[in-house]
Amino acid sequence: MQAAFRLGLIINPLAGVGGQAALKGSDGVAEQALAQGVQPQAQRRVAIALEQLLPLRDQLQLFAAPGAMGSDLLTDMGFDHQVIGELGDANQTSAEDTERCAAALQQTGVDLLLFAGGDGTARNICNQIRANQLVLGIPAGVKIHSGVYAVNPRAAGELVALLVKGDLVRLREADVRDIDETAFRQGQVKTRHYGELSVPEEGRFVQQVKQGGREVETLVLDDIAAWLQEEQDEDAGWILGPGSTNLGLLEAMGLHGTLLGVDVLRHGELILQDATEQQLWALLEQGGDWRILVTAIGGQGHILGRGNQQLSPRIIRTVGLDNLMVVATKTKLTTLSGRPFLVDSGDAELDQQLTGLRRVLSGYREEMLYPVSWKAE
Image (cartoon, rainbow, N blue to C red; front, side):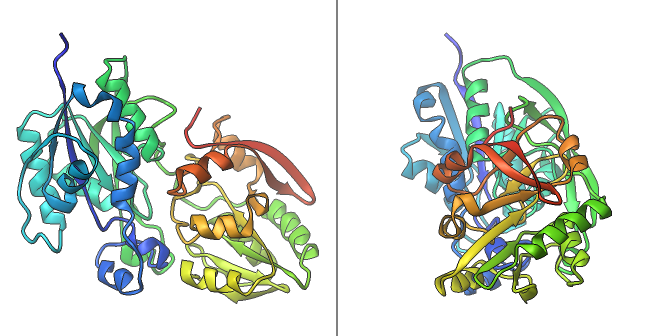
């Protein structure tokens, strides 16, 4: 009889709270985001992953960090488990708690350490984990540059399920990338290689390391910008997600947008820059027709759930799924090597509804159809 699969769990319960508040991250600003009424989503995202393991609970031996960092959720979901490690303050978890619990869980001999957070959490894990310890991240942060994360929570759960069932899964060394959030909030992306972690690899489930830099096909963006200007009317407004492509469109129209924020365009003018989710919702409550224009992260293909959490499920549903459009030059599409766009909105039902072919603006009045999936194919 196969021995039980030993699975460890760590959750950064405040991961991602800075996303909807447009704070470009959560490190050092969690209290500010919570004060704005943002509700933490990390527990819910981990629950999505763990739901994939419910049929396999008899084959699991679970170990978890205390309280909100793991044990509470496992108890709520009915998983038998052992609590490992301790928290400095049960009411306010810290990076030190993550590192302390990671070290303790590793000592139990877990086959896989499953953790939820962003690049800061991955960095904390990397500080404590030995080279041969298998890990996998559930994406819950704002910006996720590291290659140790699954493409979304459900994919993380399905990948763990493959391991539990004994399916053959390749292993690889994945980069942990460290981002300077202070520079990030000023519109500068500064990352560095921090280390490597061993992760299970199955092409549909684990994301690629984000490509850095800003490669813009100026002439193509000029063409798309001209089309966008022609489409402006008195009723329709445009919500533009983050990224160099959308910033290039605004610059081609003579407007000063934000590289890492969500901007709102109406009547040919920017009426909101670096908008929060709450500000977008207030606009939508006023009525009118709206369009959302997002772009794909180069190399990864995510169009939702990576740095644009301001575009929450309620925002997308109110605007309408048919009014969610993607802009991508042919060069950017080529970098995906045939992989689909990925969606990780935090709402599994919405992700399923977005799956299929979606319009991509790729030139002047030129549209292409490109597949969207909740997991890579």
